[in-house]
Image 1: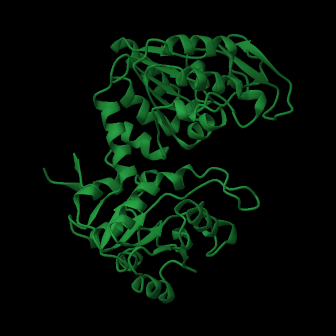
Image 2: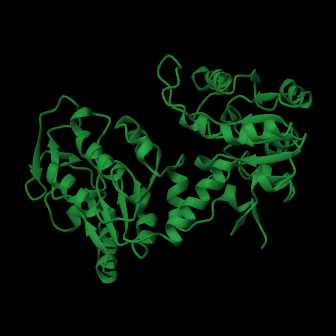
Image 3: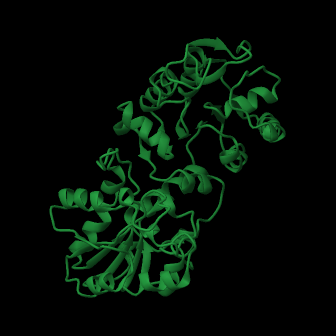
Amino acid sequence: MKLQEIKNIDLAGKKVFIRCDFNVPMDEYSNITDDRRIRSALNTIRYCIDNDCSIILASHLGRPKEPFEDKYSLKPVAKRLHTLLKQEIIMAKNVVQDDTLELAKNLQAGDILLLENLRYNKGETKNDEEFAEKLASMADVYINDAFGVSHRAHASVEGITKHFDANSKAAGFLLAKEIQFFHHIVHNPKRPFVSIVGGSKVSGKLEALHNLVPKVDKILIGGGMAFTFLKALGHEVGNSLVEDDLIPEALKIMEEAKKLGVKFYLPVDVVAAEAFDKEAFAKPTTTQEIPKNWMGLDIGPATALLFAQALEDAHTILWNGPMGVYEMDKFAKGSAKISHAVASSYATTVVGGGDTADLVRVTGDEDEMTFISTGGGASLELIEGKVLPGVKALVIEE
């Protein structure tokens, strides 16, 4: 698969539409609490500025239910871009209304226009042709630098690409880097290759697990999803999160791992609590002895030690999903210990998924990771072996 990349197309003096992923977390006062996704887009934006382009930036933020819900406005993003790029950002009042199309038309070289939240327009998620055409009409060149949404066939990701020829659309630096990293990790990893899979549910990661088993040497399972596997093995898991309908699948995955000689690690102890509550009484317990009405909310200290030992000889580590309810301090210790173990490893370490990226930032391990992906769902689909809709449109014939 050969991707058309931004550095291989002629941009000089052109009007460029860049689909970014500025879906950043904000507090109740609309302060951006983590601007990593904005900073990740700067290389592509600066490259376009250096090529005398006029630039239209577009992104979604959250899931607005009403048009122009104020808390989903991209105005705070415009402010942060202004600070980072040290230049004026023209903020559009809407997405494709006449006044915005006029602003786009009159942009000069070096000007940057930021459209309002793409999802203010219902046509975005419906991949509406007319909406995609209006977006495309603003520019000569289309650049996708939003890995985090490239698994979605939305108007600004997939529909818009139909209006540009092969030499007028490309992947930005961030998207190209993400695709290259995951392609290399999944198809040509240095061994031993260890995958850590966490998070709450098996269902969201089922395909990825099926695809990982033949590729890895070890799989470490943590988070809420571990209880479906533990129950499949006959353990009493109390009120822990379990997807009963997926127990046959869990057994199938473990059977496949056994057949292929892949080491499959599950928690040997957990931190259990009487309720899903940061004030709840909690205690470590082995997975054999979880009290009937209690729930496991984190891996226990013995599991953290076991997993850390399993990582010691790794040459490649792929981590997607926390080990527990890390948002509550009481249930964050297991995830923090795994984060430190991955960070201190000599392996190539790749972190995928928003929660996991947030976790390594909170633990202070961010700079020690080889690569932190900006997309959770997109990285899982790549691991599943799928071609993402937003990427497929940028593949050139070899």
